[in-house]
Length: 196
Image (cartoon, rainbow, N blue to C red):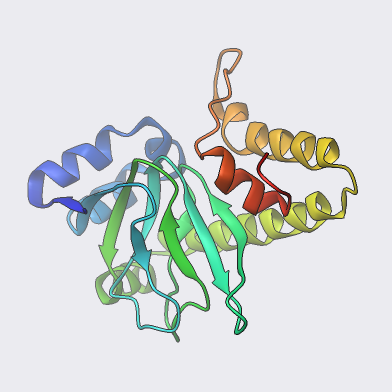
C-alpha cells in the first residue's frame, strides 16, 4: 500500500535528503521542493505501469525499483534496477515500455509530470541535471549488458556488486558497507539465473 506525504513536510524531507542535496543546487532543490510528493511503497508495489501514461516522474530516495518487462509469452525480465538518486519515469512523450515495481520498502520523491516538465523547461540547471540523469541511465544499461555477458553466475554476481558499489557505495565518504536493496529471488531474476 502506498503512503503519501505532501506539502511542506514533503519539501522538508526532500531538502533533508543528503544524497539529493549532492545532485541539486540550492535553487533547483527549492523549486523541486514546492512540487514534491514523498511516496512510500511496499514489496512489489507497482509504481508505474507499462504502456500507461504516467502521472509523475521521480527520484528514488531509499530502497530500489525494478524496471520489469513482461514478454508476450508471459515471461518476466528485469531490464534494470534503480537505486537511490536514480530518476524514473518518462518526460515529454509517450508511456514507459516496462513496469516499475518496488523491490522492498522504497521511498521516492514524486513530481507531477507536467509541473516537472515546466520546471525543467525554465531552468538550465535542472535541464542539465536531467540530461546527466539520462546519461547515467545509458551507462547503467551498458553495464547491465556487460553483466549479462558473464557466463558464470559468480561473474554476474561480482559484476552486480561492482555496479552497486559504483552507484551507491562510491558516494560514501567512509568505507562503505554495501546493503543489497533487493531480495534474493529478485536478484536472481535481474542476473538471469535461478535463485537457489
